[in-house]
Length: 62
Image 1 (cartoon, helix red, strand yellow):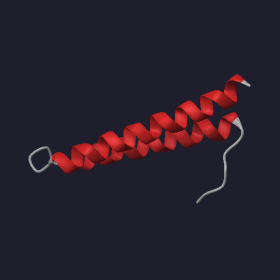
Image 2 (cartoon, rainbow, N blue to C red; image 1 turned 60 degrees about the horizontal axis):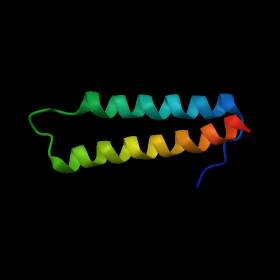
Image 3 (cartoon, one colour; image 1 turned 45 degrees about the vertical axis):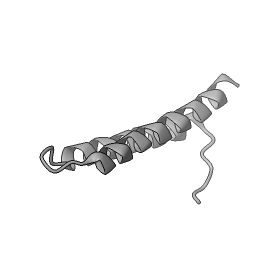
């Protein structure tokens, strides 16, 4: 996997990049042809992003 991200600036940058990636995926979707699998993948992306945020947030409190 990738390298661990330990400093707050890098963590915030990572989260911003992942959020932008999510928004690009949404922008590229055609509402007429979006199916349940596409929606499930979006939910999975949000869950992953939320999990990463929670882990980073713990670092910020220390």
